[in-house]
Image (tube, rainbow, N blue to C red):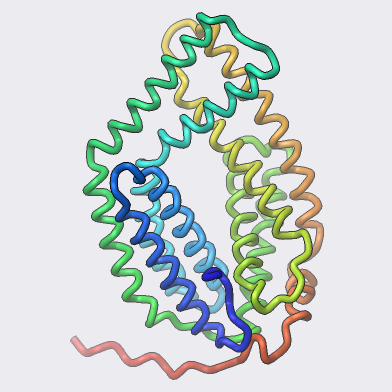
Length: 312
């Protein structure tokens, strides 16, 4: 699998290889024909999220270079999110309605009202794709090509196991900090931040599975945590799309009640997992991860010094 460091591979070489593969994946998915555009954008966004998680993981050893690349890729990700938001809202509404109706069927009139709201989301998605989608995809594709050309200049100091340790400690520490902020208010922005930190840690551990012998259940727990908080975020975004003018109709009250019930269950589940995942402190966590990787697995290859910039 591409998203893995390899045994005996210098860390910088592995990081560059993984980054290039993710960037190629973005380009391939953005080139899909209109019939596969929703799926292509979704897969491209996932690859960008992995790449940004990689850069955050490497921030202690790439420093300013990491921050600059994150800023550039953030712009590309935002262009794609606008094309994907309506599709996510439709998928989220379908799930909410299916669960709600399974628990308590609604009248035919209410079902028609919900269908009309869904049709408005479909129209919004189609409008986003018709108005500016091609230009947005062209711009992102160009930005990704520029990012790929910069990968060869990525530098890490220190290299090898110290780089991995620094990244693990920082990633885990940021997750603990996000959990502290989210306690008692998992629904909303604080839960969303914790979701991003959990996703970062999940991607880090997947990256290291090639040299870390046993990951145990932690990646699966992180995946469940991230998905629970991600679904809560999608429900919050769906709520914002509900009509706001005038008196709230019966169908909307029912949908809002379904959303509130789903969000409460998701946040309760996420909080229990997060408290378990982040109970350890960052340094012992990193030590536990790395003690199963031998020195041969993460060699300390030193890179030549970067060339001096050309004179102006």
